[in-house]
Length: 213
Image (cartoon, rainbow, N blue to C red; front, side, top):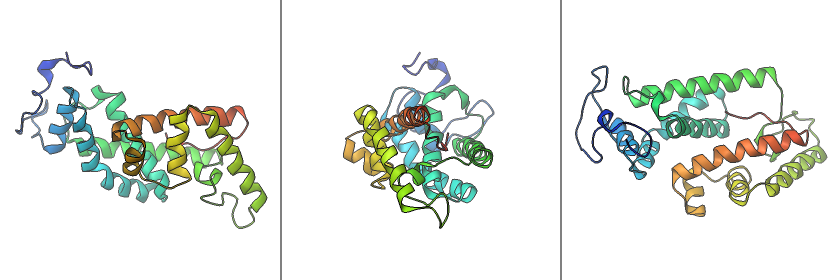
C-alpha cells in the first residue's frame, strides 16, 4: 500500500513512462500518468498535474462564475479534491474530464450560495470590489478591510500570510509558492485550510462572507 493509502496493484509503478488502460479500457495520457506517480508517492508529480490543467480550469470556471479571483480559488479547490479524496477518481475517464466535472459542481454550488446569501466576498472585504454598488461608502470599505486584516492577524502565521499575499497583494499561487518556499500542493492545502479558519473567525465576529468551497 502506498503512503496515500492506495493498494499497489491498482497503480502503475512510479516513473513508468508508458500509456496504459484504466478500469474502463481508457488510454492513460500524461495527466493520468502524473497523477498515478503522485499516488505512488512522487509528490512533485502533483505539481505537473496542476500546471497541466490549471489555466484551462480557471478559464472554464471564469466562464461560469464571471470573476477571475473566484475562478482561481475554485480551481485550487478542484486540485485539493485530488489530494484529500484520491479514491474518488477511478481512472475510468480522463483526469481532465473528472477535474472539469468537479469544477462545474463547485461553480454551481458557489452560484447557488451567492444567490441565496448575499454575503461578503473576500474581494469585497479586502477592497477588491464594491459589494454594495456605487453607493458603497469609503468608510464602510475601510471598516471591512480592517475587519479582514484583524482576522488575518489572529490566524496562524502561514494561514494569514497565504491569504494576505492572495487578496491584498494579488499574487498567483505560483508566486506565493516562491515567496513562501512551498510547493504548489502545499500552497493549495494551506489556502484551503486558511479560508476555512478565516470563515470561522469572521462568522464568530459576525462578519459573514461568501466562500468558494
